[in-house]
Length: 332
Picture 1 (tube, rainbow, N blue to C red):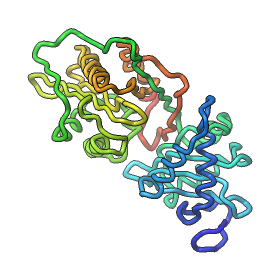
Picture 2 (picture 1 turned 120 degrees about the vertical axis):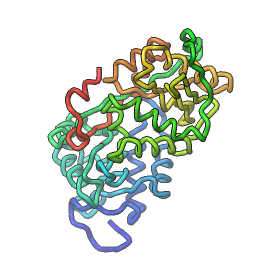
Picture 3 (picture 1 turned 60 degrees about the vertical axis):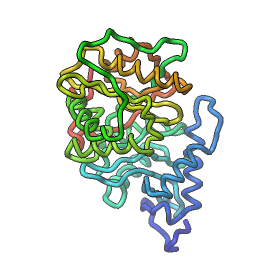
């Protein structure tokens, strides 16, 4: 493998992906082609996204060296933060998809010069043997958190609930960032799994501020302020929806303060967001739900969202490093 330094690498070593651009491009192309499943035509969209993310520093990349000094694996993700590192893309060449090779790859990525200590892995792309992947990562402490897309059909009326006395809905403004962050902390305080999916810092408020800034910016796609709403009662903010343009309208946040649950706030907020998107001529909105969070899934189904089974996938979290218990993982 030709790198910027020119020196041969030992089998099992990691190489910065930017030092071997041709090998990086080859493996990312294979990964993107494998990700085009279910009859979806191959396009370079995923490849372009991953390449750009590596080039502009959103992700760091590592190549995994094979026995013939060639790159046989690639990983892109975030280096270790306060709680650990997260891998967004992990791909191995065809002959290295057995459990032993996957375990060696993940174990190597788990070191400080990779992404370690690792707290998250993605589902393997098509072509990888799911059984071999599970056999490799479960003994290392990773557990699957399944998530799926739900969409709101265009032929259904927007969700509605009876008005709540003393509660008003208004569009979210840029100067609401601190309010949204504080509401996020309260709303997710009893949902350890969804919190762990996005956790980078030990302090929940630090994470909430960073997450809100990402949603208010362009990291997750353009923020659609006109379709994002805040519910306010006599005690202050009690719920919110945020919407971003990410391959179409994506409802990125649906949250209600625990003190306001069971009063229809989520339904009213969703209704306002759906109605605003329709008035603007936008496509059907979708959201992503953690499958074990049956409380949220039942709500979305009740107000008219439908599940898209083709989007079912998992994030693999390291339960021990994130402090997740069996009770946390069985959200209910």
